[in-house]
Image (cartoon, rainbow, N blue to C red; front, side, top):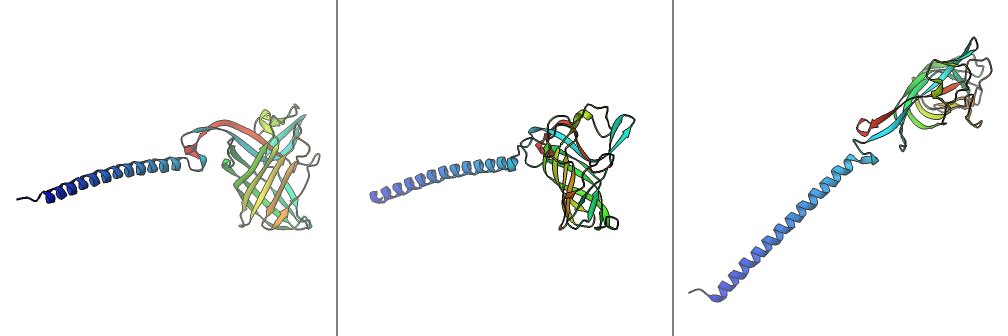
Length: 244
């Protein structure tokens, strides 16, 4: 004969097991839902790391900088790439550069994209005649760029072999560079130009090389083909974050 008390305990035990099983099943479902949600958030965050929204397009402007030749052909002033600019150090030693480069400017972005550029360098002792080294340099990063709005053309019958006169600009850019002898430096390119840009903006360059600061710029002089710069707008375009 079955014991009624034992049957009651057995029923309670089975009921308790069923309740526990239901509770654990519910917890498992909740845990899985949370795990899936976190995985989705992590994936979403990964796609937007650093504030970038992959797949989105942004307006960008391509610019070019040059150290330029300025010459006269008849009544025309002619601009060409491949000019030189110089600076002096505290002891009177000098460095002379050629150079050009490009970059993309994207509004709202602290870091420019697709930076290129470089040129040649030659250093001289304090006498200004004895060469102390020479080689090439390459742009590794554009630290900052401030371009003055509006064309920098004068309206004179100029000829621009680099770009369009209407697309010429004044402004200032700061570049990190590396020299062919392994030293690093910072190159500042500034364009006052003949029009529009405030007189607080200088024309020419300053540069560092290793520990030496060539910050006493050689100023441009009339009828001397040196120490002049120019910026040009190359194109307006749209870039995709996936292409960064």
